[in-house]
Amino acid sequence: MRSLFGLVVALSLFACKEEPRGQLEPIPRPPGLKDTPKEAGAAQPAAAPTVDPSKVVLRWKPAAGAPVAYRLTLDRAGSAPAAVEEVEEAKPAKGKKGRDKEAPKPERAAAPSPAFPSAFTYVLEHGDSGDFRLRVIPEGTNAAEDTGTVSERGFVLDGLQGITRNTASLVLELPLSAVGPNDTWALGTELLTHDALGPTFTIVKTERRNRVKLTALTPADGGEQVATLEYDLLDQLAGKVATRRAMPAVPARAALPEEGGDEPEGAPPTATDASAEVRIVGRGEFLVKAGKWRSWEGSITSSTRGTVSPTALQVPPGTVKLKLTALESAPAPAAPQPTAKPQQ
Image (cartoon, rainbow, N blue to C red):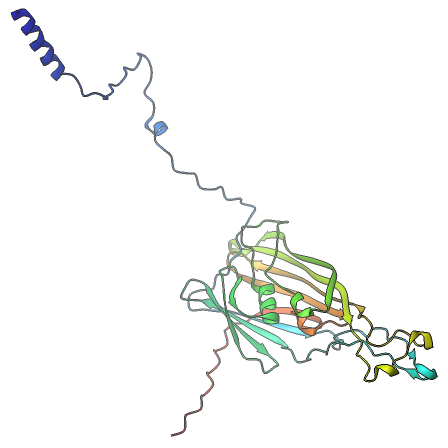
């Protein structure tokens, strides 16, 4: 009995000396095996993406407190064309009892106002939020100075509309990613506004091309690089415009087909052809290190045929030559207009 009690006490003491359950002991390393380097077992940080030396990032780099200013001249080549070309007039229809009655002429859109800026001055400066503030100053018209917000690459974020926005995007917007020779990208322009064509316009065919291409990267003095950019933009559409003849004041006097007249007035609407086209070409040399243009030139050609609303064109009408020139200093902001004092 005493021997049995002694055995129980011995087993209890042995159990107290056991290691806690779940604890793992290291496995002895076989002899001759070298230690693994510490770096092999540790997680390594992700490697930085490799920078392609054949590509560059194009960004505006105005110095703090020193805005970048350019003047874009718009030189109209020749006289201003009509807003729409004359469509062939319908032949006069024969009226009742041999009396000729002229068919109504197709309705034509009013010609756009010939007054458009002869130049735009762009002033690009740092904003408080990190974006850039853009001032657009038109010349040659009574248009007021406009302002907008653009990103570091010149993309219009807020403000500016129509012709002002498109011309600013054309000469200020740079590609989002790094680019190299033969790379292409698109601009945030809208050359034709389809909504302005009206409910009677049915688009039959449309073609768009929006492409800027970096054609060359060449070294220059002081470690500078010159990026040559070529612009090729096209917005073209063709369609039908429905026109309805007015109902005659006295329906009984309308010419009837069986009496020798053509189709009576108030007949179903007829459709006439109409089209619009905008083409833009250009070429610029951008200084990569300095972050500014060395030169930029281009042209805009727009035309319409048939009944097309002039408001559909979001560029200056006709053929306009463009040239961008850097200014040594930015124009001062326009003085605020005085407000009338309330009567006492």
